[in-house]
Length: 235
Length: 235
Image (cartoon, rainbow over all chains, first blue to last red; front, side, top):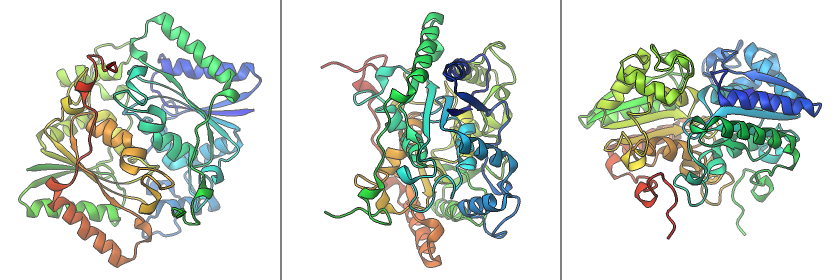
């Protein structure tokens, strides 16, 4: 299998970087090939805007999604965007390693999504969820946070994490473009872990990758439950 | 009242820019004073990292939240961060105008939050939600999207929007740091609106601001319902 990993942490001695290296080793030992977009190391520009387009369908008024389609068709999208799209297109599995910031992905990763998950190729019109452009590919993620596991879930102070606080990422982004989305590996309380617990967590990360096919996946909305413009069907 | 508006759209002829101008006019005509952080116009850097700190408490290993506290105490945080914090500290009301990207705030605004909402000043330890650093201030937002209103809510294909897809922003960010968080103004289907409907929407934005005190607010978790480390109380 071909795996592409998108990594978003500034520090090479971080737990997230150790997760990245553990994940690469676990896939490699299975015989899979792994490529990495290390967003901080690449100095990736996360700001979406008119600079993303070398040539405009409408030079007067910017409609971002329409220019994405035009830019991809004409090959005039910014080269850094085209390079990232090419990596995703050849991958069977796409993974994300990051620290949780404000119950979401870091800005540098959020902007990577905005610029790379272009209209037309990743989604479009009625082609979302199971009909999205990434249908047939799988996505996973491994992230760290300071909080403890009991703070989340139905009874926790913050409620559900992945499909609660982070629903915009797991459903609204990864599921929306068609990925089969595995439950994430979550490293709780990372800044406060003693070294042996940090090592144990990395062993868990390796096991998560080794058994990725068996990891549960999130249920996404079924577009066929809705009308042709996604209107609610009245029974 | 002092209002600070954080604006995140690259285009000066956008609906979001028109919302910003409508909001400024509505507050000004009430006698309130409005300041604006126009993130694209400021070329605001949304990437959080070691460059945020002029002087480090720990030069070896970066713990971002701890360095935020150290940097604020010593006045060595990056000047662009200190300038934004100062604007928020004097404001009674903080507002956000942006286009919805991937069911969340644009990366340039996500990174503004990561760099500006510093540990210690905005939250810390047990000081979250009603005990957060922004307690006593109010927050509002006005955003645009392409989708239609029937796609959201309990029966819609994407589920709830503000406290569903965007829960990480409304609860996990604004509520978490203590703001009283008003329901947002949501401009649905904006790229496809005929001019007269766009004008009508701006009239609604003005009315939203004129009646802001009466706009409903989101209910946040009550920290007193949980134990001293936010553990779930067993009945």
